[in-house]
Length: 296
Length: 296
Image (tube, rainbow over the protein chains, first blue to last red):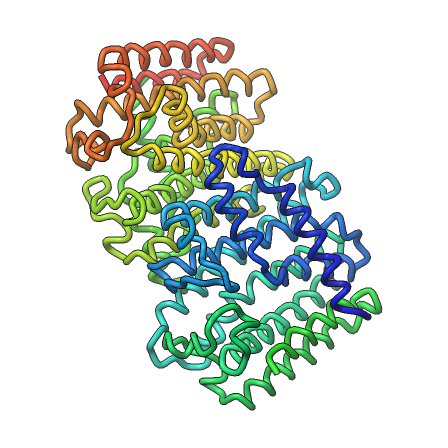
């Protein structure tokens, strides 16, 4: 299959939907909505929404059913980037080659734009007009997974432990905690909720969860490797930034070769989990390959 | 009726439930959960959760059904206070006589504790174990109202316009926009969602919404008046803080007497809306009286 074409088509769908689901700058307060849109349309890779759509399709669901879920996850991912970049956190001036939200709109508006994007995800997920095909019980389950994976025992929890670990000696269990929470939780939520939107049965949900756990960790290891060896241009930020900041990474802890080997193994494991799903799951398999090959 | 006793009993219920619904400091990451709990248990008046419970009872619903909804609204209110107090926003060192969250836990943790409290509200509202008596369709409607009233076109929107108006000449429509959004929206959500938890019919929901709109604005005017004339001790912050900060207030725009008169009228209007509800709505009526009489 042509993964690039598959991704491009879905990125277009997601970006058109995000445009519909977000208030525009003509809606009061205009500057807040401008700030929300600035970061949402800053050229992200849309990995989470694509995983949502691919998981929905993998279980035989129509792409359109999962579109609001995909957009909600991208809103949450984007809010987390805005807050991570703040002076009190990572203090980053650039993100994907453009000035960060607080550099353009000021710190206060950036904090509130993040808050509003997180909230808008739940406005969208609970909106009967946006999600007419998903029964309320499914929506409640999707909302629960997304909220749990985003909160203090998910993404935010991972961010806190990451922050606390900066410049300290960190062992392997802490590193795994950080990654399974900071990035892994939202990737797990994406795949699980895509499956639920596509009406997956419990056995299929387990296969999807196994895939997401392995692929999510592989994604993070690949990101760590890219930070060491990758091209600055591809990431839109400086290479070696994690190291300079004293952040613990897989290559630092395992060595570069061992980290690569681990990513490769996780990719295989992710694909193995999808064995019961057949050809509809091919995009999910290709995404796992793509994730890891970025970091080679 | 004895409003103080009524409130005390419900504050106890709400605080016991908040303790159950929030991860404790023994759960990873401990410091994040400590920060969340620090602000949740900082002695707030619990006006929003009490309104939730009183609205549920006013329509004949059992108090316990509305308890998770009440706690979710208190979490959202608390997150908004943590973020409002940040150096980039109001830069407050004290809240209710205690150091603000970022003073104790640092700015980064305070931002994340706010994020996590907002998210935890939706974890709770979508949790079938916490809300076993509310059908999924009701929960979805409750989640939608709460998210909408908290987001860019609700509370966060009001906060942005308030911030943008600091030190500027502001006219009456802008002042009303700020107040109906910054505080009014969450009060509206509290009363509406209490009614939904109690299974109110549409006509009763309209009466409750009318009550909440009027009472919410009365509450804000009373707060503004207290800032001018009130006792510092009662508020746990300096008197005249709004004025010093160049914030627009009702007494500044209308004069103290006219502001008092407007609060009194709104109280009457709020109570009139409840005419169809009979004696079960007495606590809601008493709360409207209490809100305004604070600012006398």
